[in-house]
Length: 301
Image 1: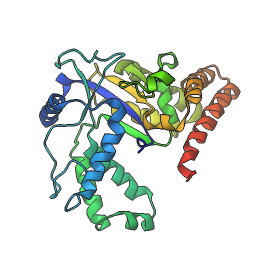
Image 2: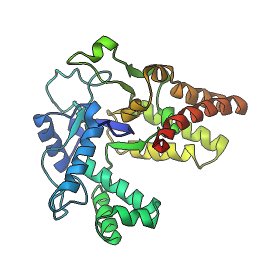
Image 3: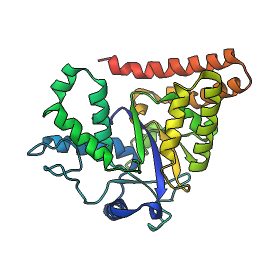
Image 4: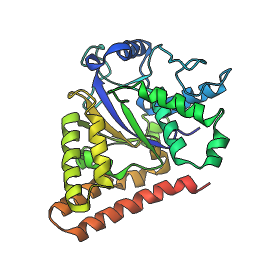
């Protein structure tokens, strides 16, 4: 079964910055073993399906049948490779971790589903009364308090303003050769960027200011301001990662290698700074057309 067609914006935070029950659960999860980042989407899907297949079924993953939170070891990602650990160092306060936090993320997605879908679809999809589902989901989201989940995601496409956070030259593209694909430890196809929290916040703020000045407060500028607010929940020593995740399954190697999404956004922003609206629009059209082609897979069946 393919991985979910989901992309991710993740924060890897120093283990020492985590507090309370989450810190204890993350440490227990690391003792059990971190989830490989290439398996994160499948892990999310697995725990959600297990919740639905339980007896009795549970509304959300990571909770008991009475709706209380499961307090066992957390599923957690380790930031290995560029900007992270080598994978060989002992776990310590500076180890960069990203808890999956599937339960609150699923609750937030459920609230969005209830707010955005038609009554017919909501009725067909929900196992119990809608008011009960909404109340439960909103209560789980409220448990976050002043904190936030370490992951936000999108399906079938990448929110285009997210590319304003990255340096185009720092893309990490993993395309195993034909020989490597058959090897026992063959690396999985990946496309992602890593950046420091300071760089990500500076780019988000600068991009939002520029877009507000040139295009207004709605649309891309609003997305960047929301993203910056989310990132400010985390430690200044964190890393931010934009990962195509399961979307790489919708593109062949040649398409991934030729992808200029980050360059197109950088060029559009530079053109806006220079007052060249025509050049900015040309970059945006290339970007829009590329991701419209990817997102069209959602309607292909």
